[in-house]
Length: 342
Image 1 (cartoon, rainbow, N blue to C red):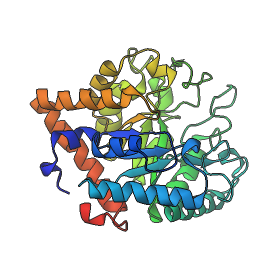
Image 2: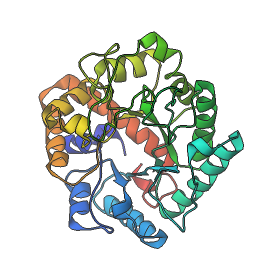
Image 3: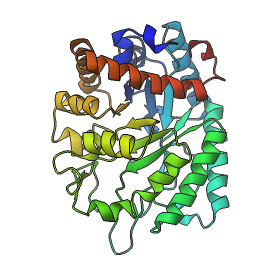
């Protein structure tokens, strides 16, 4: 599907990746696909009961999108292994997750097995790998999820995961840019502030993300941390400087840039949805992630749509963002029944 032929509603909806309640193609999910025209769905434990159900759900999502004249959807999940693994038994479990991996082959094995199991049930994007560095001497919020405390080791392990996920047609998303390994507060509950100098972060925290970009990672997820020495006003997920100037222009990343969940208290507790969307558009962020059912999804859609219709420059940027989204869908979703929509 040529983005030049997209309606304004499609251009707006493609910028949203959303969560929902339920385990099947219910009315709420149909509304997200046919009316909001979302670009992606993210699955959580509340949506999952077993392999057959997940496969039926994913297939029904893609078939319904095609019946509505919509492109295929990103269907994403957080399957890092260890602490964060939405898929339970009979899916393969990796006790201890990233911190327990001792060799590159461990990372490759995890990615190959995970990719195979995700592909089998119709999931096409994994919100992994974690590229944060859990530095020694801090009570890092990422200690139980990061590969370790050495930037080069984290880079090598993360790149191995990216390579084997994407070789097996699962899009990888490196997170959480520009790095949250130094923080001790959990952004699910409050916004952490980090005052580390950018020069220090560039020589440590950012190294794994440079490696991810060099190995063609499909997406990069922004953190909800406020890096006061980089952008004293906005957290990374809303920062034009971090998302556009640093990640896109200085580091040359041309893939998908997405926020972390905008329903987290670090964002939802500080900003209204109008402000959030204004910043996302300004920062050239492709996907706004809204993980819970509620009015924010429809409000976000209307705000993006209004911005597209009111400003010619915003419309041009919206087309460019939609093109990045469709390029990735064209590359990874060709083997789905909806491939004729690419």
